Structure formats: structure tokens, C-alpha cells
Length: 247
Image (cartoon, rainbow, N blue to C red; front, side, top):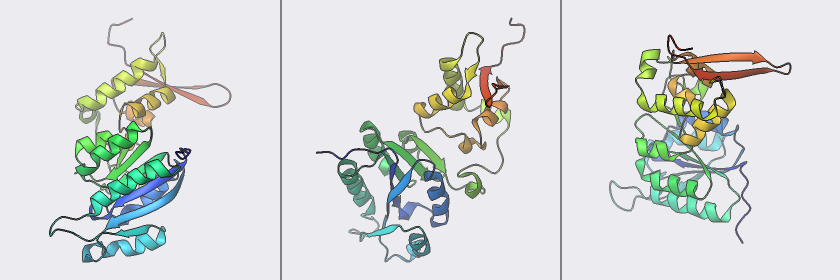
């Protein structure tokens, strides 16, 4: 009988050869907003001197090191071990969210399979991570920015409006999300827009340098952001800026 899946249970699987030990605290802090990281494993050939910097992180954050020797010179076996154990966890443990820490494109099929089984996949890596792997995750956060420890994965300086507008993929995602949730006057609740963006792909506004989604919309002059008080709090809405001369 398959295990009952809990969305609050998280499996953290780290490709130690392709992940920075210095950022593990950032990763754990981010995952705390999703649930409890019950499974914590890091894969690698721990006899390699290059992985020595992981020793302190493994102990501090109670991460289990999984030893896998290099079977062929120049090719490690830890990637395949991580994949196999991820599938074991999928079918035997009550895990609803998988966190894959790597910048290796080899994990793209794994992320796609986990999502096909209804699991959430949170990816962490650096800017060299191939786009197919980034896109295969539910959400992907970059770790190689100067201020990554401050906002979980945000660049030190947000790009300007022209830089954002030149990103065709981003602009299409934003426009589609607003269109899907807008009312008669064109205003769309920001909460619904944010959920729509998350469902479209591995979107996170922090990867564009903004702590809040409203700040991202504010930075692009193609949109307007409105805040209204309803007595119990503030409701934030966004709409596409009407063209000049439009009614």
C-alpha cells in the first residue's frame, strides 16, 4: 500500500559535487517556509579533498553523507545514486516536496518524473544551471549571487525597467497571469497572479532582484499596482497599464 503523501514533508537531496556548502543555511531557511525537512542527504565521494568543505555543514544541519566511490575515472556515481534513492523515497515515504540541490542538467528527467507524480520540486543551483533543469522544477532559486544569503536568492541590484522588459519570457508570463485573473476594469488580485505565475513554471521574483512580487510589477512601467484597505488589511492588485489615449 503506497504511503500517504504529506505536502509538509520534504526530502532534501544534495549533489555535493555541484552545490556550494556555504549556502546550505540559506537552503534550509527557505525550505522551512514549505514544511519540515525530514530527509536530509548529500551524495558524493567523500574521500575527495574538494568535498572537505562540506564536513562542517553536514554536522551543523544534520545532513547524512551518502558515500559513493567513482567507478570510472572522471565520472562520479553519486548522480545515479541520488536518482535511485529519490525514486525509492517517492514510492515508500510520505513526502510531498523534493528539494534538489545541483546545477547539473542530468536531474531534469528526475524533476519531471517527480512532478508527474504530483510532487513539488524545489531546485537550488547557480546561474550556470541549464534552463531545461530550471524549467523542470516547480521553483528554482539561484545561490551564486552576492546577497543570496539575505533574500534566499536575489541579485545584489535589481535590473532596470528596460532590462526587465527585454526579457520576453518574463513579460509574457506576467501579462498572461494578469490577464487570467483580471476583472472588468482590468485589475487582478496580486495573490491570484502570484499563484498563476508559480503554476506556470519555476518562477520566483527574487531571481529578478525583488523581495516582493509587487516590487517587480512596480519596476515595470507596463503595469500599475494598486493598494486598498478593506478594514482588516491591505489588498494589492495589478493591471496592465492602459495605452495612452485609451478610455
